[in-house]
Amino acid sequence: MKAVVCVEPGRLEAVERESPADLPEGWVRVAVSHVGICGTDYHIFEGKHPFLDYPRVMGHEVSATVLDPGTSQLVAGASVVVNPYLSCGTCVACRQGKPNCCTAIRVLGVHTDGAFCEEILLPADNLYPADGLSLEAAATVEFLAIGAHAVRRSLAPAGSRALVIGAGPIGLGTALFSRIAGHDVTLMDTSTERLAMAAERFGLVKGILAGSDAAAAVLAATGGEGFDVVFDATGYAKSMEAAFHHVAHGGALVLVSVVKEEIRFSDPEFHKREMMLISSRNATRVDFEHVMESIRTGRVPVEALVTHRTTLAHVPVDLSRWATEKSGLIKAIVRVAG
Ligand SMILES: [Zn+2]
Ligand SMILES: [Zn+2]
Image (cartoon, rainbow, N blue to C red; front, side):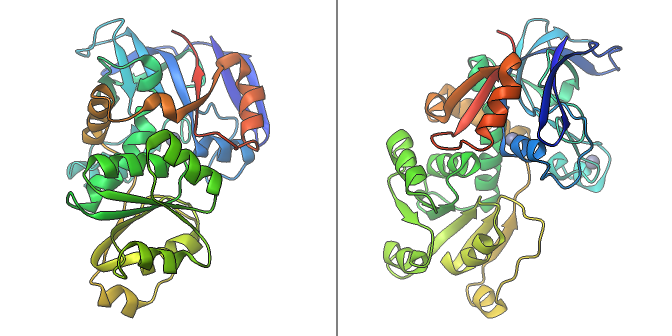
């Protein structure tokens, strides 16, 4: 079968590989249909991912068609969305129904070879029927589920004033699901281009430019009160630290993206607000189902999210280029088959 391998940082190669061999009990053989390219994939390509062994086949935002359902309830030919978080099923987190933060989690395309290839094997529990979704739309479900999970974690009720910091794909997904939850959403980003794109494509018209005037703009936008819930999806420690100041008294801060270094905050600033500080990691089946239902009912404009398209054969050239040419790029999708 055809596959694209990241041989080492900066080097992607299209290769011929053996199809995966024996199907383990409870696993399913699928033909990959579409794969989204994620910030994580660019990081792997650039050699910025902290714990990753090369060579690696990337790709974790996946739609597929069932080839061999094995002993599962799935049927051959069915379209599925892949949940790429492979969990152990027995650890403390898994026992609490939180496989998204399994102590032994392995993410497809990160810790184990992923979907930039024609066929993969996956546990049946990680495949969700994608009825009513196009196979391209089905490949956007995973990254949107990250935002849907963060919004669910926030517990913020309808009517909350929400600030989403970072208007990249994860931030936009968070903003869309925050709006679906009935929040009054404002975006913050360092790029006027990205804020303009969010307004134009998604009607997310309330925007604040990040920078030295941001704190004053937050107060101006909220009658001096701050936001009831703030989501940080920037991947920058400085932004996460500044976000504490944008939260209203009694409000919540949800850290969606993760950084390698420590973040610091003033305890009095945190305490006087009785702030809830929440981390959000990956997503679970509930979030995937919520995203699929939201796409089916037309509440998520997938066609406005997918700005770039390519095929498996062109991934080595196109992914290398998009790693640096980010203008106008929200989500790029690779068509493998279908
Ligand atoms: Zn991703
Ligand atoms: Zn586990």
